[in-house]
Length: 154
Image (cartoon, rainbow, N blue to C red):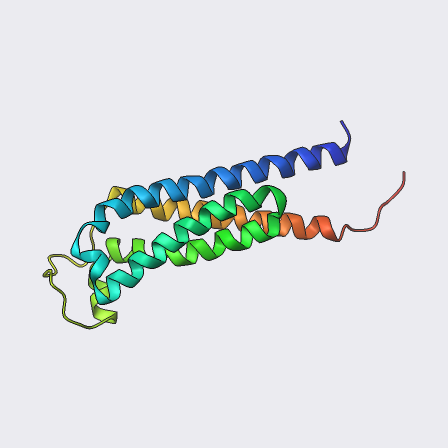
């Protein structure tokens, strides 16, 4: 097997892993959004925006899954944008105290504790980190494939 064949196989595997990670982010987010969608969370002034951003991010993750195989750099960029759209939702779930300190206002639910452990939110943040790492790696890989270095003949 030549170096070029190994490189193509590695690039194909990275695309598959990036697509799987984006799909996992979508699944984790939609399962978690269903818990909050039927409550006051989706109708709040700040929390409603976070809910809409996360929902839009989940849709963008699905778009990134499709584009990863045809336009890898575009898919990686959309996946990174989706990560930035979904992260505030998870941080609000995990750290309601700092959110209330930063975004002052009238909240319908009293604050019991500043930090809240939620397994789905932690899984969501970890999946977002994985997608960000794979997207950045995919972006740098495809960037290197566009402008290869000089060839040395032996």
